[in-house]
Length: 189
Image (cartoon, rainbow, N blue to C red):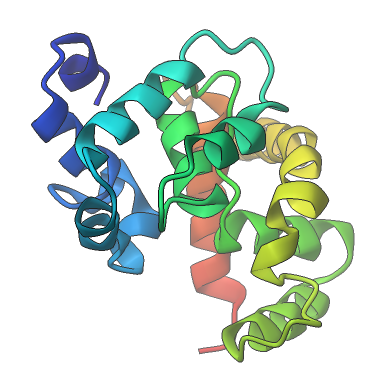
């Protein structure tokens, strides 16, 4: 993604950043089919996504990520897709705020049962769910960073205990991968 960005290959960059050319570019966008919606609903959408991504590169702290996403005013690109984009662009500073990282946060700070109950209500689009999408920017994004850093550190310690030493550890990407695996393993099917 950074290679496409630095080469100013806006079409290739935007398709990867929206999870269209490969889901690993943005799992939230890919999982919910948002890439085509973003491209079809915004004038110069590719350029807008590219410009937003460039705003994440110089960040030294992630608290402004929700504001940058909101100010970009890109239809269908909100905190879930935007924060994942920020993490892909600047993974030592920015983290993804998506249903899997929020589920992990609730599982760790409360319980797996609480996280699963919140997920069920979220899936039913219940506005009273602790995971209600409208609360992600304010209630979860600021809280996730420190918690995900702990997840990354604990994951590294556990991996080392099994004789696996992660190379070139990128903490927020590592934490996101752990959250995704835990979500897939512990959530009700």
